[in-house]
Amino acid sequence: QIKQQNVLAVYLINLCVSDLIFILTLPMGIHYVVHHDHWIMCKFFEFLYYTNMYSGVWFLCCISADRYMMVKFPLTVRSMRSMNLAYIISTIIWVALIILYLTMIVYAQPREDEHHHLLCYDSFPLQEERAVFHLCTSILGFVLPLLIMTFCNVGIARIISASNAFSTQEKGKIIRLVLVILAIFIICFLPYHIILLIRIAIRLGGMKCKIEAFLYTPYQVAFAIASISSAMNPLLNIIFSETA
Image: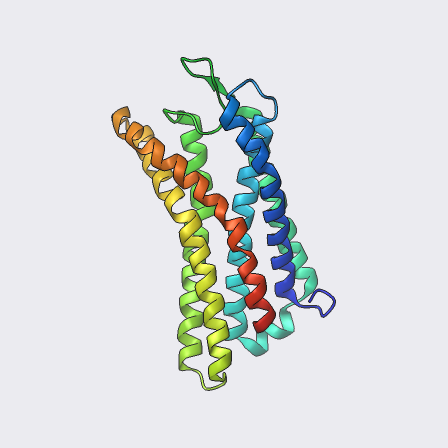
């Protein structure tokens, strides 16, 4: 698809790269969870985990926006789309996220609990500086992409349903792509960010720690569920091969 100058393939390849790096970080995550020791790689794992999670979110967003523009303004966008623009957008996403999370791992210091276990990234209670940082990243990495993807995918569904320019088979393929993108986003990222935002509200709002303590186990489960996106994203490649 790259050789055929297909712009959408650029975002899918970046999504695959993000998934591959994400999968490679899992052994480091298992090591941290099992040992809770003073492990120098723990902050590096945190950097890779969040960088690749949010890059995956934004590349899903790019795919949705690209499909919407192609359906809504086919003639105008077709002349404006280019491989170079897709490469530039992809580079901006990677560079912005790398800078953002490098800043976090430089200034955010791991701390020890009462058992002398190193708490690198999922500490309880949530530290105030991390709460502020996660609030910003949740808005930029979840809320904003959620709004964009919802707008784009609902728009695609409406346009396709009302249009006579597409055959029934073509409509089915495009709708499947829309549904898979939304399913990946909702299943993988919605639970984690809802619980995280509640924890942030508790921490910054000065509420009782007992409420946050109750949410900590569901938070860890949701954190693990976010990893499923790497297994679900290949579905996009299958559907894309039909719709590209």
